[in-house]
Length: 533
Image (cartoon, rainbow, N blue to C red):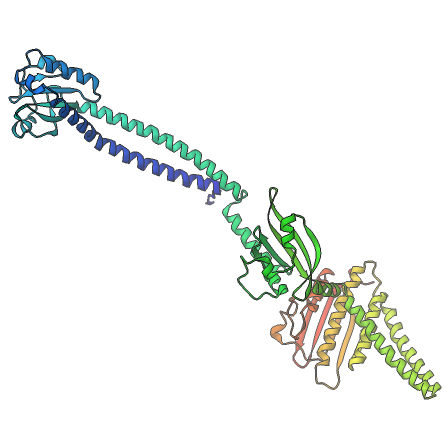
């Protein structure tokens, strides 16, 4: 069964609704119980106050002692009932319980009914009780009537029918319910407004989306090789990735919250924070290095609330560009050729100075024939002059290092119309051959050899670069293509990573076998239709 997923707004609505309903129900129950339990006390207290006030009315006791022949007590109490709310009866009686005031005039002269009057007659106390009289069940307040000599001559009872109290309680409960529903409605409206405000502040994103964005942001910052740094309106650093720390040579791990000028002086971030104008590809000199910097303001509506910058080491950028384009390979080839040419030129100059012109001629012709033979051999099989130039340069490089460079080409290579393919081949061959030279040069063998072969196998053209150098440990074979990994100190571990990328771009494959102190073999297989005749 598919699990139902609610949006943040729906969850907050439900949660707020539950809280509001729970609160309203709890308050309603509380006030209902309060109304039921305290309404009697309130009415009883009110009745008692009325009873005490009337019992203390001037000349009231004297009139009662005279047995009220003119009905003054009845008229007075009757008029008071019409003025006082929630009171249904006022009864005045003497010490024998004979009534001199009653809501029902027909009951005058009769004796008090209920039995709860004995206490006021016997003790003279004021109290509240419940009893059933001639009018029915009622809540009654009793107070003694004292004459001027301090002698009790009767009592007064002010009462409210329990039926009336129940009606008042029901009305109070009804009001509470009405107000509760009103509060519930206001709560729901508030919940809707509140959730809309939260949703807006979160840019309409759900919690899982926010969590995923945070995780993606963290992973992205870790993966990006460029330095990333951002600041808020107060020039405090809010974000900085590891690459930025490496470029700026920051060892402190607690950089968040620090001022930008403490970590990155002369950055230009503070100026963009003020002007709000982006700066793209600007150069800065920081901590002894040249960097290329782009700064962009972070805007909220029309207000600049921060700045974010990306930057990279200019030297590293230049070096990477040279690696990617194969520039280094061509330059190295030219340098080797130039070096070899100068050495041979010096030999010729020496022979001429010694006056051995014939030997100089012979030497020149020998060089010419050797060079022509190698060059013609290469150009016959390889039509692309850039690749020929690279291999000739590697021949000269091998001579410098004292390495036997054996070349075997068993196929024909065309000249590419797409220079990107030429660049890819230059990068692949240049890096592999140079790595082979390095591995061979480090070995202690007396005979140092590197073999370079180009074969045709069905529809695949295979480049093979083999050396008898120091080899690669087996545990490193799975890591050698990782950018940044290198078994050589001072090497940035980019060459084989570039080789892997270029081989993939040509839809090819790369395989390596190696044994320690025996040598290493790289085989590059590239579809023939993509590269050769």
